[in-house]
Image (cartoon, helix red, strand yellow):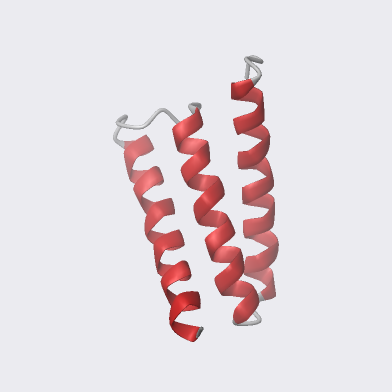
Amino acid sequence: MDTLITIAGWVGALGLLFAFVGSSLDKLDNLGTPYHLINFVCSVLLIVNAAANSAYPFVVINSFWSLMSAYAIGKNLLGRPS
């Protein structure tokens, strides 16, 4: 189980870096659903890792990150302007 928790943390961290770099290099639209979906999934993976390691400040920040990403996904899917 520890290995899965570690893998979740690494996938989450690398995924967020991928989204950040893609957005910074104008390869990934930071207002688009794919960007927010990557952020949502990866922040949830980081929540799992942080909670398992009792890193509660990271649970809080990634919970907020995932909620904001979910909000943006919903807004995009409903066609509401930013």
